[in-house]
Image (cartoon, rainbow, N blue to C red; front, top):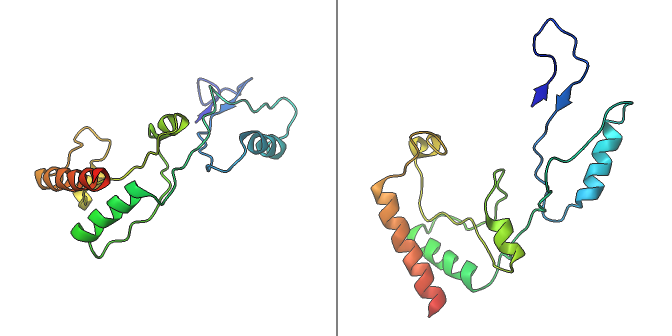
Length: 147
């Protein structure tokens, strides 16, 4: 987000740029800030994090829970591949992982294009079929892990 003068015909005395940055789990926050400060090094320009920096986290991609998820995937979607991804958004997983809890962003449904387009919108929803099949898959995963 860029912010400067209140009108287009005024030269601002102060300008501000805000950038939302998501670091990878193994990146050093201080080293990253040092690189950014060096890149934008200019008299009168400062680089300041807004708020507390929460480091990125990751959960292991092996273990009982991941195995149970993969077995459910194989039963319901045999042509699909279970693979870790990196989200560009925010989840509560980082706060859970800080407590030692393994957290995954597994979604037990397949969204069609219309459902994907509604994500985070005023009309966000998924089909009843997705809710039902997702509940079945999640129950299978819980039973698998608990057995």
